[in-house]
Image 1: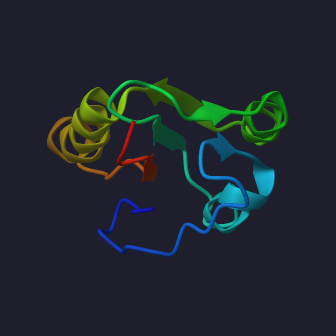
Image 2: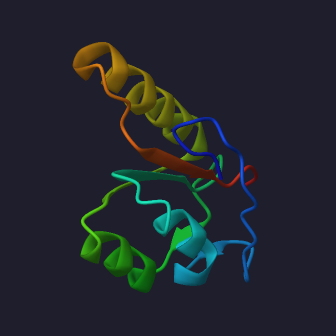
Length: 99
């Protein structure tokens, strides 16, 4: 994963194509406003309903898309928030790099 400050952190997953709460708990503890998840080139990775519910329960915006678009969205959200508001949006990105 990568956060709004450009810090890269480990993203260990229990199952390769399943993204669950345990896989993103460290990111949730960073207090992001938005989480962007890339599900691979063809969108094969899946975010569990449990993970979605936990993210939403914390008031965090969740964006899920194929990785190519998700990386663009992450960069736009990170960069445009500074340009428009003068404050960087706390956005975290997770990007499945295959399938």
